[in-house]
Length: 345
Ligand code: PMV
Image (cartoon, rainbow, N blue to C red):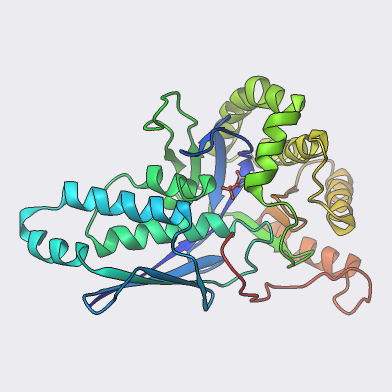
């Protein structure tokens, strides 16, 4: 038996991916850019065992067995195994060939709420692909395979600041993740996650994107006329470590993503009242200082991701704790992240 265990962190998009031009290959209608969290924060841990005693491939997510026949899981398994057959070198040929004939048991756990709009599928599929690659000794570009598990997963294959270039080719060979800057580039940058609700989201990203692509004229405008320029500006802001520009672009892009959700018919609501209160708190805080010291971003859920610089963290956390006291009976603001294992989205 061979067993491999790896971890992959969540990534938070500051220029959002929303909408596919090819559903099967998961090719996006716009490029996107994200920040990958540190390995010891929000992450997925996956162990894969290969043994001649296993009768079939099986998968457990957060302790519960899931259907291994899920098409995207199958794509990842098939593609890594295909690469392993192609790329294996002579020295390893015997072991890899042997393991390639064995079935695998996959066990994956998240240390944060799954499918609550905290990019669980990104970390999940990135980890699956990376761990499979280690099992079969495959090296090199893997973001193309992770992308076919969950689009945003391709960005979790790298640390630091990562862009997913949408690409132009029909077969998706050029739709890949690329590191813009390494994780060491901006050491003062901090990310806080405010959990407004650990519940599963009502509309998953796959079906939400489909309806948006079909019905939202704003989404088309965004993809063609807003994102290309914004990607350039964001890369420049990151390279210069210009928090003012970085924060403003991040908030504008989150707002436009949620505007396209409202422009979708029927509309999709990911933000709740707590999210809206956090948005206005951030703007009031920045207005008080006359500059952007804090920025928010929301994915497909109500939980806020806050970007700020190290010297601002304590004061802002104190302010949030004051405005959303943990003991209040109103909407819950949970400090820290509850471990709430359910299943991979
Ligand atoms: O990769 P998916 O299908 O989970 O979609 C992710 C979509 C957003 O999180 C809303 C945006 C993004 O770029 O991560």
